[in-house]
Amino acid sequence: MKAKLSLGLFILCCPMVLWAHGPTPQKANESVLINAPIAKVWELLRKFEKISLWHPDLKDSLGDGKKEEPRVRTLVMQNNEQVTEEMDFFSDQDHEYGYRLKTENVKALPVSSYTVKIQATPGEAGQTTVVSAKSRFYRGDTGNTPPESLNDEAATKAMSAFFKNGLQGLKQTLEK
Image (tube, rainbow, N blue to C red; front, top):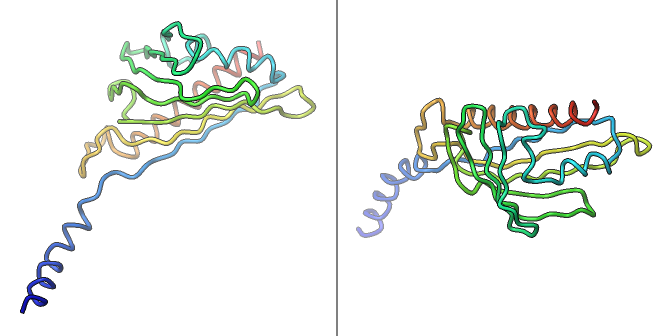
């Protein structure tokens, strides 16, 4: 009798378990080929707090003044909305750094969290550089039925566009 009762409860609860899941992580991976040597690219790219010098989606970027990790920056979008990011690691030798969202703002980017790795690698004959941005993130609304503006598709579209625009801005700035 107990076995039948347990089986019955399991069968009743099973559909709820299948529907009761959270969001899955999304990814955005973008890269650009820049006609400049890696030293020139890295000289600008390594300035974590100065991203607004080359990213067209940003009105401003403000650093915390630290030279060691964890460094923090605040990005001011063109619509005046802000997000805060914190650097996780930095390597001059490998021409890379990683950071994460510290303070979310779905009006700025429709995501609830993200991690990003930026890396520059030498291209052909040392005269070009490939810069890549790889990110893992979650949609802005992590509930089971997010509104369209905060779902996986909106988050992926926004993050991909943010990286594409930024990498194109970096390319244009360095190739002038």
